[in-house]
Image (cartoon, rainbow, N blue to C red; front, side, top):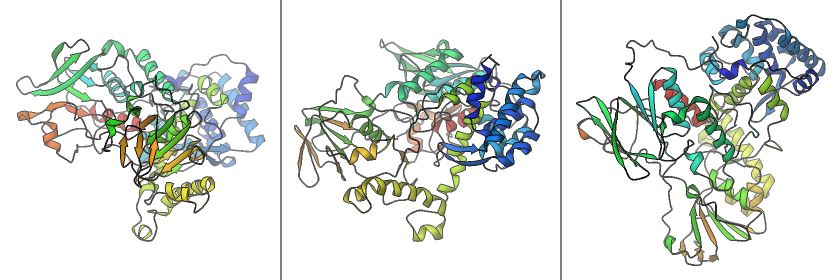
Length: 560
């Protein structure tokens, strides 16, 4: 059975010439996979596969072929759309057919162990149980979900799939979580948009491979609209405490609404989906509160702040700082970047991040096309990158990188530094890390960050500020930098669930259980806290490129 609405895109009448024109620009590997599923015929992989090769085309590998083969493939697709067929001919979840066309579509061999996962990540079927449910879920069961961001949305939909009642609590007035509240200049997604979305709801309408925050927030709002999440959500309600009630075998949920009204409700199961990017971290710099100008943390951005013509300092060198610098460099009078430690920065590999019209058109009108592109984006971003983080002890002993695969990434980033700043220059030295790629999170250049650092009105200080005073910042070597605005792009406190008073059996708090070393079974459960699940938990995220959305879906699968 096919269980994803996007996987069965309805046949909408379109102009034949327009369809053919868009098909000619498409990825032939993806078209072969689509054709196989339209016809239910795996032989098309043998017919066209040997004539298709793959080349790098970030964020994935693109199939290429000769013009004659492309015309033959386009004609076959058009015929396949027009041919009469039984309703079950759209064999979206036929593992044998799927396995035959995978190498042609993805441009690499795929082990059988990944087939079930890829069926789900392509949006061809919903998450399937791996173990039989031995005890039915009581109809009276209610799952309380804390947070209406991406993790909360994913958890709610998984609960609905299982026929379980759910209630979402969120302190804001709209869904979105971090994407609703974080609005600094340049905020955007740095995971490919086709992948950084719900596998169950493949979106063909992304305008950018790496959309701005507003577009991503609009996507989350559209999910709430489509699946009726608002009728299950208590907006403007902050959960402050979760206490296990041993007598009732339920969780007490202590909340307060925007009017200050306090309430205690109960649920058999609680899922915290509040994430961990929600408590801004301010650096411990002497005199920070003495600055007479505007001080603002990127997580608490005030849209009324105008940077035009101002002397601005950005403290930080991670993803947020990179996006802010890229966005504001043209407007400011002078910009100083304070960098405690450089990150490896990957170049933007396309001239434009705009999604081409042919991909959006085919995603809307050609069944499975958007699904296969999502799958290619996932495979190229996540598990296919696993060798990059595997340490080769002999290699690592002699090199800064940890393996030959890791070294390919290091050389790409180093080449980008040398192209931009000149090999061996002072600025090149300042931005070059002394650790292997993925030792810290890789940062993607939105397109103008490194170039911004070369501008005459931009300075890079390779150290933290020594002191803040009313006029600006004093550097480590004693220089005074006068400023109008200081932007702290210094991240968040990564102390999981520290803002919630969570008490399990015998009144033991979660913070007592964790101490300085938070951990959870399979990332989501903690002994002594029955029926408490954590979506966005300690040690649950892979470190080799997989998006947080993937981890959230996996955790929701485990919970339900």
